[in-house]
Length: 293
Image (cartoon, rainbow, N blue to C red; front, side):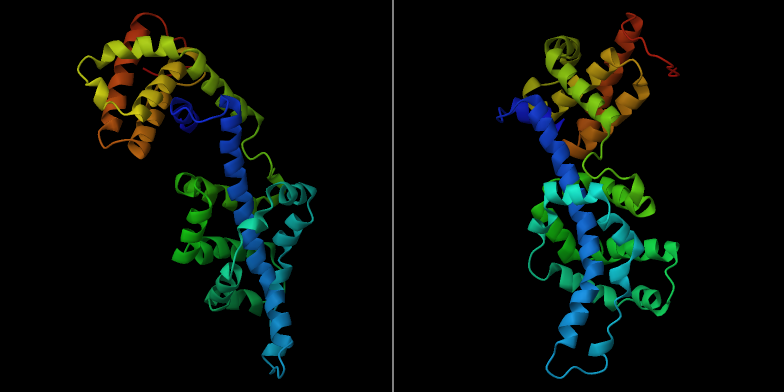
């Protein structure tokens, strides 16, 4: 949707290059968030060194607990070749500025969850995961300043924040399963490219199907995003035989509600539903393993 909008707006670039840039934004945001979690954990050693190097350190300065800096999940990731490569490509440190890490670490050390974590000498794997979830879900996402900081540096945060939460939780749960440079995977990337190219190649055909359904609508008042969503929806209905029609229609209704006007959800619903019924009546929709009634 975003790439088609950019193409309609005459933004320079090919469809494939623009789509790749969008996926790169997703990858960059994810690697930044993982790195931020790591930096907060590792800051325990920085804090310990700074306090120990005071002119007159007291006993508390000399006994800062650095257990979190040795978190097994963090070091498992830091030692992985895939993550090292991601750091080289993405360079997430470029987005970490000022006292961001220090302030978040200080908030962490004041929490009861952290105090309980460092009070236990063993490194129970479940506890190692839980403290990282706490750092992300409570310390980072619970900080208005941190969320504003992320939003300021990553234009895709508002759109992809919920998805990122899922990605991060999956990473913490199964760190070895993550491909940091290819979050989407070949199958989803192929689908995205296929759908985008189909929407471009079949634009005239899709619009010829859509336009007769717009008789009761003022063309000047139809949002550009709505027309793009209708094109994508028609392409899925006609050319993607493994996607159930209900899934297609519901997905584009949700997208219209999220990204377009207040009336867009109802508008897209009505038009796609009408198109679907007509295509079925004319035998132009053939779905594989299709259970729609």
